[in-house]
Length: 328
Ligand code: UT7
Image 1 (tube, helix red, strand yellow):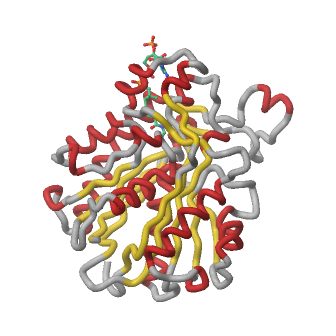
Image 2 (cartoon, rainbow, N blue to C red):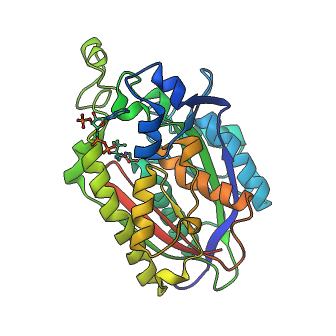
């Protein structure tokens, strides 16, 4: 990518206080801590308080990101919120966030690409800044997945949690910033991971609600196979289009869905586990929020240094996937 160098100026994160542990889930569905830990790596997730919605989580993460970028909300030109759990159909969560932040000069829209949404958002923001159209863009991944999770279904209820991560994108010195993006989609796999109820195909009715169609439906095994295939290949393609090698990676920031999926990506990239930021044991899968949350924690923990080569990679419903190479 030529021209203006675009990178991350600041990061932020927020997770709600309430923890839902594997032991709690043992009381709710037919499962056990040992199964969940060995099959997924997850030990607990965070659950939003009843009065919290996605824009509230997004707000907390965004305030931190703005502070760490050293800019004010009125310097934002655009807000992109990647989410599958908007506060409501419309107005967009990005508009609700714009109002909460007082980002009066910012345009705002939501982006729907499930767990790949944050990387899709980065790609959009990067392009808009690189063309000179905008200077500062806030990209947020925020989810209240507990609101769309069926806590009678042991296949899905063990996986998901709530949280938010945010970054501010802007100009960075030459040689730094985003080096490539690889985005992909395969609509043929749309029925592997979805919510059918409440949309224009199946509007909410008493029947659709009693059939539990407003909750996540997932074919876990097929999503797993897809994820294993695409995580490695998307990362490799992003590396090669940036002109980097696997050995150049200092830190992998993967979508936090399942430790076994992350391990298979590490294997494919010839990386040891200490080269990946992993926090799914504490937060579970937070969909679009998982990559920015992991990135913000990596920064907080001092695991990201100037000049480091980061690879961000994720996959999700759609099906969708995305990867990016970023020099910090
Ligand atoms: O962001 C993208 C979102 N989705 C994903 O990333 C999901 C990707 N898939 C996965 O992570 C895994 O497929 C799961 C964690 C969902 C499931 O793990 P698995 O190793 O693929 O298990 P499985 O579905 O093949 O099930 C194995 C067994 C089954 O029993 P039988 O048929 O062998 O008797 C399941 O009924 O484990 C059973 N099982 C459970 N047992 C205890 C399924 N869920 C549970 C559970 N506790 N929660």
